[in-house]
Image (tube, rainbow, N blue to C red):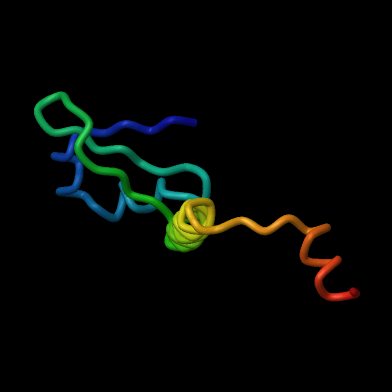
Length: 77
């Protein structure tokens, strides 16, 4: 369930934080526009790890590629 609250609800922050669950972030608005997202720490860790992996894959994609059959042939010939 998508939860959107005005940032002013942080006056009663325990009530807002109680609504944050894994896969259920709370989005806060300021002056009617999306401004912040409060997410579960486990979800944050997973997001960070996925982003790190994605960055490594992008970096690897730019490096020299080797054909498996060519490498295998060089190793066993």
